[in-house]
Structure formats: structure tokens, C-alpha cells
Image (cartoon, rainbow, N blue to C red; front, side, top):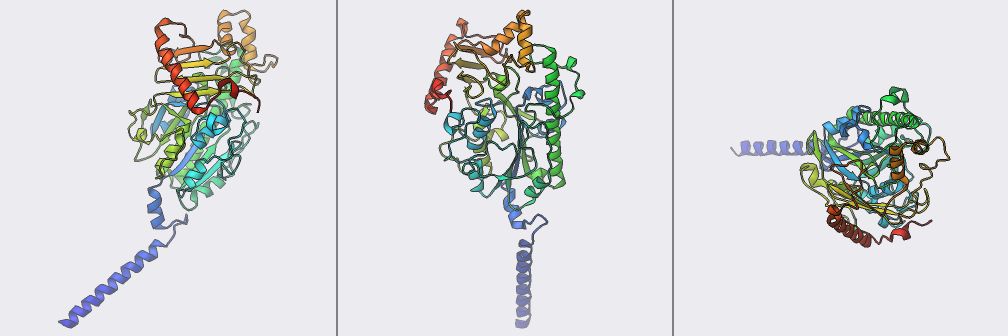
Length: 472
């Protein structure tokens, strides 16, 4: 009897040792991507993230946002399989400030790039620091002129997407991106497309009949406008195809279902009343988030979110604690409950130098109303890339010519260059911001409250108003 028990004990011991050996062996066996089973289990709690960002996109042209001029099939897929944000607001409608806000979680007055092409304060931290500290590899491919100094933006630069936003070609490849996403550990990769940034020389504009295009209501309808719009839409098509190729790459690598895919529209288009303004065609952006198992498909939210909120949300998703001193805050709760609110107000800042003479503008909005404060209304608004009527190729030149004989064209043209001190819009009933209610007595009380809110925000930001729109 003793022998049998000893034999059983020995057999049991051998079994335990064998199991331990098996577990240890397989714990250290790496998959084809070089990640062990234990690391995979750990990484599953920290999902991969790919963010595809457009460049000067009129988000209202996306078919998932109601656009009718083209079907954006691949971008629409993200909307069908994820969450669509209807109120993502850029705090400054130009490339450098928007991207700096995205990466730092700070409003422009605090990150320092409050004028286009002005660098950020060189002691700042960015998403590259915050996620790296949480074990993420943080990469960027494509438009990269906001990633300096490298002390503030220590991204791993991944070749592939075009880096020059004004390039006349847009050649790119995905090989290096495929290598990056196969490497060890969770990653956050920013893919920064240059589409549809001017000069609108890629894509196939012959897909679009200029005469059949539906123009935004605040545009002047001219032949030049329609021809340029067709070229612009060709680059929106190019952008959509890029999103499709990224999704196909993730599918081939077996990573689509363990990767959060985010699409961002940046700010509005380089057409009058879009980029370089605080109208909705400039500030209002798009964001789509696909996160299987967390975000419900075909969901939408009207929660007000700003670009400054994205880095705090990524930190939250990665398991980190809120970074101290940021202007943005995590909207992760909205991902699971789209009916929740996030911000009561969104803010806007515009400084015109170096794109034109000083013309400082500030804005504040809630779910329904927007107040725009043109701080120096006695000046004319001018952008050298958009309102230079000596340039025959610019769309605005054709607007100005028609305005000489057409009353409606004159109203829309004056709307761009002549601004009263205050503009106030009911965005629910006037989404194109064509009816200024600032002098309507019925709105004076709400206007006064919003102006006070705006001034409080400016004070908290140390925003000097006119004093910030100076040469640097």
C-alpha cells in the first residue's frame, strides 16, 4: 500500500513538473510577430490604435456625414462599424495649431503654436511621451511638420505616407507600416494623409461633373468654383481609398479586431469661409472610432468634443492616469454611452499672421448657438492664399468678379472679408451661419452669457487677444 501511494505521488509529481515545463516553454515561444502568449494577453488589455488624419477636409462632403457629391465607402465603413462624432470642434482652423492641440492636449494659447507654422513651446510633453511611458510604441507616418522639436514630439517616424502637404504628387507605400504594426508590444500609429490639401493635383477629377455638384450654401456659384471643387473632391476620393488600404492591411495582418481605428478630419477646406475662419466650415470636424467589443456599430453622438480631448482619451484607454495640467479630458465614457455629454462649450481662436494682416477672432459655442467675436472689426479680413483677387486662379477672385453685378454674390463675398464685432448664429436652424442674430433683441441675454464665458476662457488661457496676432 505504501508503495502504491509513493508511486502515485511520484506520478503526480512528474505530471506537475511536466505541466510546468509545458507552460514555461509555451510562455516563451514567440509567435511570428515576436510576441509571447503572456505578452499577447497583457497587450489585449491595451489595444493597438491607428489614427488616420485628413488634411483640410470638409467633413460635410463625407457621405456618412450627409455628403452627396461622392460615396466615401471606406470612411463610411468606420461609421457603420463604430461611433460617429457629430460635434468634434477644432479650436483653431489651421493645420499646425490643430495638430499641436491633438498631440499635446493643450489649447493653442498654451501650447504656443497659436499661429500657423509657429512652433510649440519646446519644453512640452506630447502623446508620444504619455503613451511611451505606458509601454506603447508611438509612431507617425506622413505629414510631419508639426513634430518639431523632437524633444516635444519623440515619435518613431515611419516611412510610407507623403510628408509634404503641398506636394503635387502623393506617392506612398505601406511596407514600413506593416513592419511597424508587426513588432512587439502595443502601438499607437498616426497616419497623416496630405489629402485633400491644396494644390489638388492628385486623384481623378473627371469622376465628377462640375455642373452637377452640390455646393455649400455659403459659396458663390461660379465656373471656377465648380472646377476647383471637382479637383478637391478627387482628393477626398484619394483619402477614402487610403483609409480602405489601411483597413485591408490590418485585415491581412489579423489585427483589425484588436486595433482601435480612428478617423479624423482635421479642419475645414481651403475655400472661402472654411480653413482660417471660425465658421463651422472651418472649425467643425469629423471623428469616427471603430473599437470592436466596446463601441457599438452604427452609433452616433452629439457630445461636444475638441481635439485637445483626444490625447487624454488615449492615455485613459492605455490604462494611464490623467496627465496633470492638460486642457483636454478623456471622453472615454462617451465611447460606451454615446448619449452622454462631454463639454458644455467649445472654444475657438484665430490669429491671422502670417497668412495675412492681423485679424484676431475668438468663438464659443454650445449645442445650439455660436458667438464669434471679431476683436478688430474695423480691419478687412485677408488671407494671401484665399482672398488675393490679383490671383486669377483663386476661387474668391471669381466670387469678387460676380459680386460686382450680383447682389447675392456680394452678400456672400462681403461675409468673408467684412465682419462686424459680433456674429451670433443659431446652428440648429442656420447651420451655414448666414443669418447673423447679433442685433436681435431676443438673443441679447444668451449672447451676453456666452461672451462672458468666452472672456473667462481667454483669461484662463492667458489669451491676450489682439496682442497674440503679432509677427513672430
